[in-house]
Image (cartoon, rainbow, N blue to C red; front, side):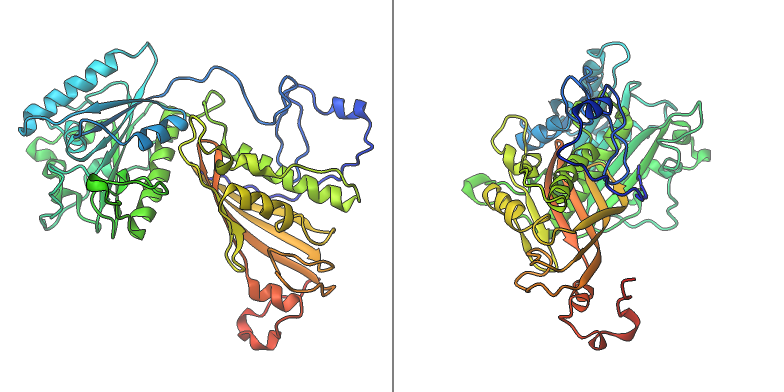
Length: 468
């Protein structure tokens, strides 16, 4: 679900000489704290940490199924780090589709029987087991879902065999009724549907070219339209087989100690598929205050709190040191149990300023990035889009160029001019930690405002508007 907030509240200046009694009155249990961007959050008096809730998290069971004896521990750890209770179920089968489908259903039912009353589970399946589970949900012999307590099914490359990536063309192939996903997560008051995601490498294809049992007509005895599930097929052009099982960022080796070749398309496809899968699983389980992982917007707000606090201190002429938000980045947790990623990166694309390891990140935040520069810097959040593992902010940055701004105008002496620019910040998260940040803005506009670029050299239609 996408949340967009318009922020119009200016950040309240705080003085170091504030009355402690007044501060205590505004930081009691569940008290509303004026936020720099106008967002209300709560503070716990027992911990003093914003947005943290310590109720016992509900267990969210996830079964990973593939056709190998062992599965990549990095992927399992990544799911665990996001708050899932993961079990790996290997399944090879005998080669007979009907027998294998029934055997796999029985194996999943055994896992389902282990759940307590009210508990649910989800499945992430790969290759042939994914094909078998997908066919189980489209059998014409029944109009019910095979697993009553299943809340989501993710199918990666669900083909009869792992090497079958040639698709038979069928004419007049209409999408099945179960491909209507408009009522998966927001159905009517008495209607619930099982979300099924299908992820395929290669170009987009017609579903009936892959799974002939999902395009039968009602006159042929098809009752799948009565089943309480909805399918959505995602394709990843340019990706190779097994793209979703390649861990990006690690020094991984395969058989014979040869490095795994990870293409750019595989990396993009993997990250996009992960975001879709994580979003689907969180919505299916119903993420709330009892989720084991801190909400990413809470972490992101704490990150900006640190930066804006030091901006305020500098504006007020105080010299109190504010610790940079490095510990909120994944790089600072490298090697810890439960941290599946050990890298972080901040990149300002127009100037190539940034850092990509814990040492250079500390230097970047203390010597280069905000609040280094003019003392009158102001940051205002204009809009925000929150995804399952990504946040996109649109912020307005303004100041008078009275000091060098290393990340915005590196190496340029102060010009004394007013500068105002809209910056797009894309932040990625993993297990409640910030992994990557990319910042984009119109550098030509900044150069014009600072007097470093003749506005007459710009195309007439895109000349920047003068600051009032």
